[in-house]
Image 1 (spheres, rainbow over the protein chains, first blue to last red):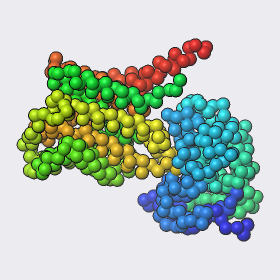
Image 2 (image 1 turned 45 degrees about the vertical axis):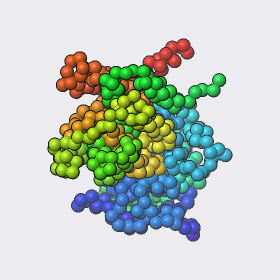
Image 3 (image 1 turned 120 degrees about the horizontal axis):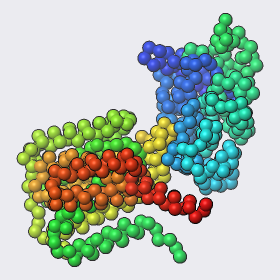
Image 4 (image 1 turned 60 degrees about the vertical axis):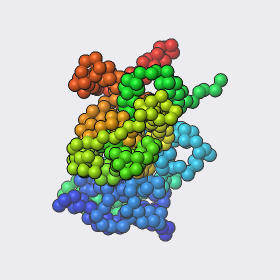
Length: 245
Length: 318
């Protein structure tokens, strides 16, 4: 791995729900510009980890440093402003707004001081982002009328509008067709090329293999593997967790 | 030609009504108009929290009564000018809003609504047992017979309430059009997504509750002079809680003009019904209108107008 300091450095994250241990001392570090796959069976704690990192819930113990700052006590909106931005498994658009209206929220509230593409105008910036994800022609349509794949793209576009340094894409491809999966993967590549580190949480192995440089495997709240994707996929413990013995 | 900014219109309308109030000599119209204006304040204030952010407040009567009883306290101590009482009522009510917000805004949906209802009941019980302001017996506030510059004191109260209505409408409009309004709309659509887009949801909700509560308190402050005899039942009347929800709902909750339309419509109907039929019928009229609007036009009158306008815009292009 690089000698550079990690962008995100979370150490011994624990989370219990009543008696159930959802996360058991998980360490996770992400370097700037990295592409990381986070995989694991259902109920292994992937979403809980995302929630703890993004601030949707707070972890019981553990420290999270981002860009050199301790952030484990910050509310979610401040973490977003620092540059940890997530998308949701089930798209959560602002349904009373148009597609472009959805983007103006993070542009106004999270990315105020960034001028990207040579413009500080919210509408122009939003149109540039929509161009990138292929929703430009839907910009002024109500977000309530989008198809599933368009909704996933809107989730990504809205996350990009917050100007992330780290994008956590939580199952952005679940339920999509093969060609739609390819579309989203190439979109994530494009965002990564702009310098955004990406954590891809996914059950679609094909996408994870194609995208990630590194894979982290959670099973029953514990990290059981963290290495380059090839090594992880040949790890006996990972194979057992996925395929049974 | 430059477009006339829309904030001009409320001011023009208010000026026109003041001019009219100089001509009309019958004080009954001032009495009735005062109630309509008071509901414009309450409905617009309610809508800042309830309509823009989706947090339903059932406790409007509590904030209104804080303003009214604030005036009673001041009246007993040193009888300050009405403006002072209004500012006092607004500040106290928005501070109560601040406390309520911190205690309850973590509650979502129906639980928040129940908490605000509880606030009204708790405060009413407190006032009932507070002898200084008259307790259950109420309080008589002596209204000056006249005031310089106005045909009558009732006319003065009417103009004051008109000013408050203007302030409430302009504040509601400014919030709707600002980034605060956009943030509140994001909260209404999906609070978790809003927070993850960088919207400081708790801060915005607390702000909306304070502004909303403060305006309601200001609306209540002149009330003791209007009614001259204030008791807990009239200050905490169920009608305030219900009307301030029903009026924005019927008028339309996403636009500042919605609560104004709803308040004028419902309050005028109620005033007419009180005179011509009976005062008992009021809440039934509200109920029937509410049910019809929720089923037939969930976005209120503003929603109906918008749908009509969209239809008309689409026709020539096809």
